[in-house]
Amino acid sequence: MGGHARVDLQRAIWSVSSEVIVYVGFFLLVRAFGRSRWVIGTAIGAGLWSMWSGNISPALICGGYFFAGGAAAEFLRSDLFRRRPDRARSFALLAVIAGIASAALFDLTSSDDLLATWLMLVAPPLIFLCAQEFRFLDRWQKGIQAAGNLTYSTYLIHFPIQLGVGILVMASGIVLPVGEAWFLIAYLATCIVLGRVVFVRFEGPVQEWIRAATLNPKRERITA
Image 1 (tube, helix red, strand yellow):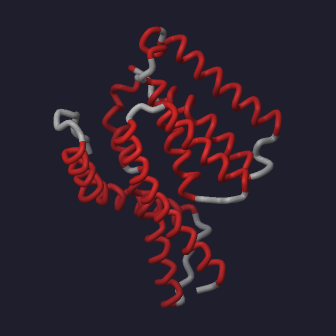
Image 2 (image 1 turned 135 degrees about the vertical axis):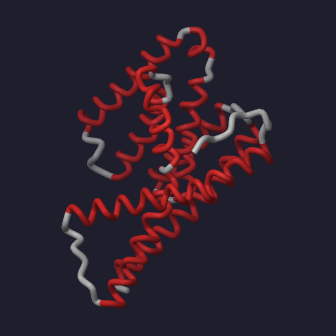
Image 3 (image 1 turned 180 degrees about the horizontal axis):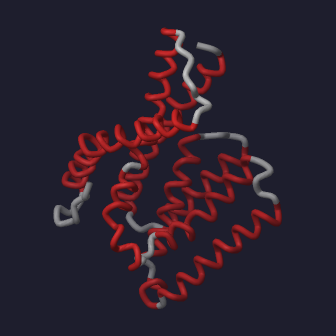
C-alpha cells in the first residue's frame, strides 16, 4: 500500500474515531445542561478557535458542527418561533441569503479555514429552514425519512467497501473500470443497499435501545 493510501486510511480511521468521541461528548453535555445557549455558543466558538488558531482538533471542529445543528434546534423551540413563526423563518432566510452573498463577495472558498467557518455559521439558519414542515412533501414523507435514515450508515459503509475493493484489486491484479459511469452507479447502489441493511439490522435497533435506556419511554419510535 502506497504512502498516500496509508495517509488516507489513517485520516478516515481518525475521522470516525473522533466522531465517536464527539457523539459521546455531545450526548453527555446535552444530557447534563439541556437547552443551554452557553454550551452551544461555547462549542461553536471552540470549533472556530481550533480552525483559526492552527491547533487543529477534529473533535472540537466536529463538535462545533454538531452544536451548530443544536443552535438550529434551539431556534426551532424558541419563544420567537412559537409566537411569530413567520418572522423567525424570515430572519433565518435573511441569514442564509447574507451568508451566500458574503461567500460570493469575499470569496470564502479561497481557503479551507474560511470555508469551514462560513459553513459552521450558515448551517444553523439553513438547518432551521429545512426542518420546517412542508405539507406538499407529506406524500413522500416515508421515502424521504428512509433516505435520511441512511445518511450515517452509508457514510460508514462506503470506506470499508472501497478498502475491500482496493485489497482485492491489489491481490488479484484486476483492473477496474473506475472511469465508467456504470461502475460509479454500481458502487453507489451497493453502498445504499448495504447501508439499508446496516440501519435496519444494527443502527436502528441500537438507537431504540439508547433511547429506551436514557429518555422518556413515551417518545415516538423510529420508523425504518
